[in-house]
Amino acid sequence: MHDTIAAISTAQGVGAISIIRVSGPEAFNIVEKIFTNKNLKTAPTHTVHYGYIIDGKEKIDEVLVSKMCAPKTFTCEDIVEINAHGGIITTNKILELLLINGCRLAEPGEFTKRAFLNGRIDLTEAESIMDLIEAKTEDASKMALNGISGKVSNMIKDLREDLISIIANIEVNIDYPEYEDIEEMTIGKINDSLSKLKDKINKILKQSNTGELLKTGIKTVIVGRPNVGKSSILNCLVGEEKAIVTSVQGTTRDSVEASIVIDNIILNLIDTAGIRKTDDLVESIGVEKSLKLIDQADLILFVVNYNEKLTKEDRQIIEKLKNKNYITVINKTDLKKQIDDEKLQNKVYVSALKNENVENIGNEIKKLFNLEQIETSDLTYLTGARNKAILKQVLQGINDINEGIKNNIAIDMLEIDLRNIWNLLGQIIGEVYEEELLDELFSRFCVGK
Image (cartoon, rainbow, N blue to C red):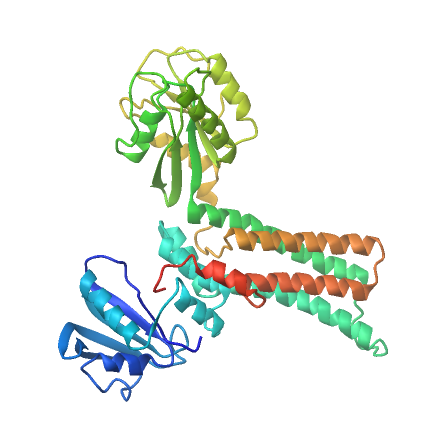
């Protein structure tokens, strides 16, 4: 944290502009060594300066250099950003000169890590920065911005405030029992407060599932026996020839993946091998993989033929899909109807060959997941496996306290459990953290961010 770091902050490759970012106590001194404009150190903060990057007497590039003084910067350190022409050779040469003159190459996510360690942002805001970079839909972008702006952090801080209020009242009751004007914190009041807290956390967890849906999309597996048109349906949904289509059974031996966006919701589609008994070793491996993918999917598109009665394999798949989110896609409506479809659920009739009514699959997905009911006016959702795991630990902690109350545990022992829950919530926003967690979290960022 006491050295000066540098990295290329724009995507590698040819472009109009590239940005090389420098942060740390020696940022201005180091950049001045390779910059023709020698007024950088004395210039006012948040100003832009024209000049050339030089290597000795040789000009490397014509640049604009932005100077930003601590603490009003992203990292709360002195920062310089060099805006160069976006050639790969030139950009790497400027970075090389910075490293030769005293900078250290930044680790992945180190600028954001410094922003966190210096109190500029908390952990949820840091994670939201990565979410914004990776956002694939408008709603995912809005959700990330809410995280960056601190709305998600405030939601967790409110929960901690509720807890600290209970803890403070318990402590006052224990330490100053002689004061009559102090509100007595009874077991009944603790129970009521914990019940309200539990309701809030359950609501956040439910909303977090919606947030995860908006962020990462719906893992959608297309299954069915061979030759029902699974690959054709994938191609129709994606709008390109992603999967090979033939009339030969067992053409798809392995899964084929693609992503599409339907009304701001990402569908991560996986076309699978046709499910049937087979002596072909390669195909049988594909069938086994298809069955495993059913268990891992958020949604299954179960494809059957309009022009055939349900087969033994169809009925076995239906049995496998019990208690799962699935849509029955009845394909080949351009042929004569033979299917006995009365008991099939969530039916959509399509012709992949003629690309007819395929859009109705999207409409059925929206109904199945209540996507039209998702609140998009205020996308303040907590996402990420780490955060959800902590909230589940908090719920378990509340349940343990409730059990302790039933067993007449002393109120001062309950206070210890309440503090543990308070610390758990602190882990979400980074009020409580371990160095290993930070290393793992920020390693996911790109270099230069």
